[in-house]
Image (cartoon, rainbow, N blue to C red; front, side, top):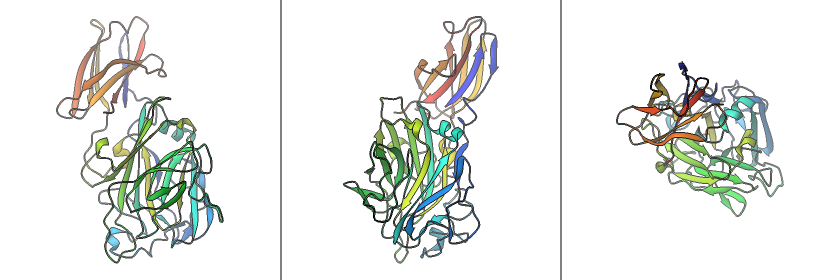
Length: 381
């Protein structure tokens, strides 16, 4: 989404909707902490979080740098820092993992109010990514963004479920669901949702990262999620992609798994990770564009208004924005930066090349005291 502002006296400014509503990283956790085989609980680095990681569970802990056991071709699994690498994708610090399958662990962390607001607005799209390596067996590891943490409690029959019977969350994991109890999957990243329920809804993915005989883990995958937040009463959308280096932003039709649910995402406050296996997670990113979360995955032009012109004589607005050929865009306007329900045109087809320019007659919108804000949004197919 890109926005601009004019007044009846001409162009006042070219601006963004909010400090976080443009191409920038909103959440970042690289597990860049000191120590090897060091418990995650209490660490508080990264970007966009309020407070430290809180870890619950028993037996094998969630540790920083506990990845040396990952056997096989190290170039495909862990690097010399104990972290995960993916060609062209930024990586720093270590990674999060468990050694073995004894017990279960859950880690959760609350977002700042600013990050929550930027990631939960209706009529918006957010993206997330994580580097992940699923173990050869016991593929359970799950990460969600939602209202409540998942359960990891000794003796509980609800382990792996959400800790609220009416909670909501979107995310990804290697788990499947067996009648309300989670089970190990095939190794493909799966779409996961908790839809007003403690038990998960899971759609299994169609792509299993390669596995080399004799290894303990599958090759590292760059798993990317796209969430389209719709107005209340309309189903929100989750798409999961297994991104290949160099191919750029994926189309929704290329998702390996997808889910829909009508959420009140304004109550989404935290990330939660849960595992009873030895999945390795690293480089967690949330942002508002694909390049935010997958900056090395290939060429992509972020949606942005690149030029704006306004004629006070004719009341015509000339708008240019970065675009993709054949993609449909909506041009919306507001006078208060709150109500964006009005469209100038909701069916502008992107031109060939990397930008689109259109002229719009605003004679019915602006007068001697009117201040009008405009934004361009990509229309979901």
